Image 1: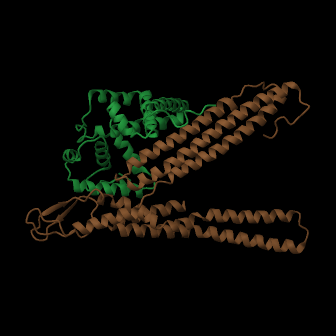
Image 2 (image 1 turned 90 degrees about the horizontal axis):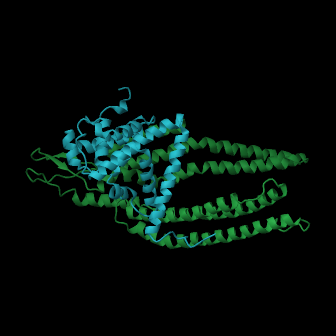
Image 3 (image 1 turned 120 degrees about the vertical axis):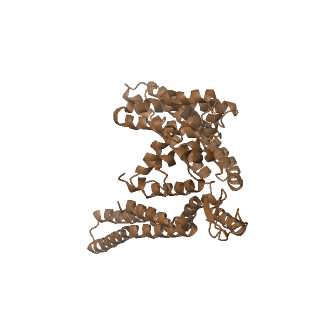
Length: 191
Length: 308
């Protein structure tokens, strides 16, 4: 390991730290995570604070970039892969679809943004309507952002296509939320 | 209004085109004015509520306030989008015979006037957004004081789980920590409260708040150097037509003096930034000394980044 900032802290590697963060974000009880990893809360909490300071110290952003990558690969962590939040069958199916269907992913991104613009907790709205937790959503988002990063070099047309699609979906959901809330403030102003 | 119906000798074809465009322009101006009224009314009605919620939201992360602010901004955005869509459809997409040079000229005049009006609207929209954003304020001093008060109230109340002896909590812990009982050497686990766990995060924000006057001093330099540049530029322009040697000498001296001031200001920038950064990190270390060594590494990184 050439970068000393990537050395484990109190025996907790960056992969452990990122996977624990992902599992916590998906709603799993921290106690069961610590147990599966075989660590004490006090050890993890101190290591967690120190991993944040490593990211602050790292001017190359290598720690932060790897954290994002490991966060999205939490389900492959050998000690934590068995830990899954309680998810409905519909939620599981939606999560699988989110991983494989880019259109579905872009639609939910647009829906989430529209929800925030109408005063709703977008992450909670996705959880309530599609059974996907914020942690799971963010892990999938990391994967799609890697695809997008590759597209920047060889397929910019694809980027525009999905940006347009997400905006279209956002507008559709915005219209739906506006309708549920009795319309927008300037609906009565016409050209 | 300028430009329309100004040429009495125009042929009837152009007069008709002008009339139609003028009607569209009048409708567009009225439409924009109504949307501006909505922007003003909605912003004015939202700000007291947002301010109140910002002050009273009991949630640690003020989620209720942030949701409401997002909704208000969303409505402002929807008004702006409505104006933009109509501008694109009715003005940018206005149907006319572009093969006809005279008609094209009339169209450009019409379009410019409508765009100018739209830009006025857009400036108002930006101001309204800023007013809404400005309702957000965090009192980090108060949050820190609550942590200090809490520490004061609990520091002598913690007892050993094994022998019951009192264990003094000698500092503010922001992570779960093992503390050994001085009487029986049993390892006890002390878990800080949720607000104490925020110490490191609040510490940085509070340190930034306490030292922002120093950052401002640094950040104001580009504005000051720009003002000096404009003064110099103005003097240089005035020399172009100047023949009086005495005045030329006097103004040239002034230009040199301004240049010197400019260079002096520029040269103080790095030192001012370092002064701010040092003060900010010193404050942060005072608030959370447990991570002082790590803060120092961050300080060096930021200083190096600045020098790049």
